[in-house]
Image (tube, rainbow, N blue to C red; front, side, top):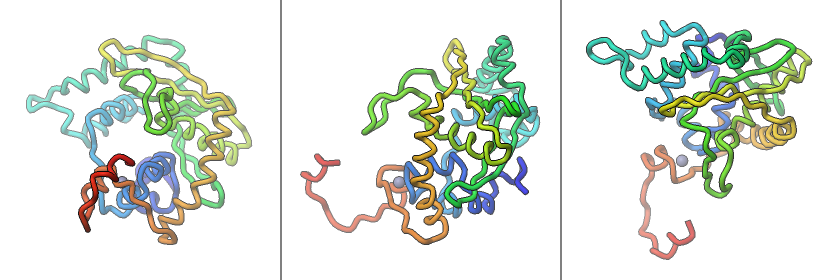
Length: 256
Ligand SMILES: [Zn+2]
């Protein structure tokens, strides 16, 4: 049985595919696998923690979050500047009635299902049964993002939130029979916080689900040791574990 306490446990990370895990495999298969086996740990960045702070507030688990992350306080016991910003974001969100309505569903609802025979887990930030699925996002800003080989993408596509919506919708459909719209309720960390609520249109969700189906069997196979993970040779993990075997010609650099 999956709970909020064991959702990210090593056993359940191995047993189930999740959306962030899938995205990690897309970036670098070798790093994603190393993270699952405990060989490698991704950096816990301040930027990530600010988002988690806001999440924790709306889940009603801020006390637990503070206890688990003592580094968010100064020696004097005051919140560090970044987390005071998180407090400002929370206040901005709470000043907007529509935003609050979207966040007022059932909080942190966990469901499991199967896609292409692979067990998949999801955790919905705000589940409005029979109506809609909402995920809370705390972004740097809402500007388009340049992604190598793909060009300029909206922040939603650049961060793979269309994929998240697709998987959430499919797993909820398997559990309840309802195919529900997927919304992002988003706020920014800018000096003046911006807010927005975005619906991801169904055709985008359909394309993303197909993409998930195309790759999930390979990633699950890597977890089971059936396929060798590919190294991207660009990420921190690949740099850390790189072994030089021979010098290279300057000319090959032009093609990278
Ligand atoms: Zn890599």
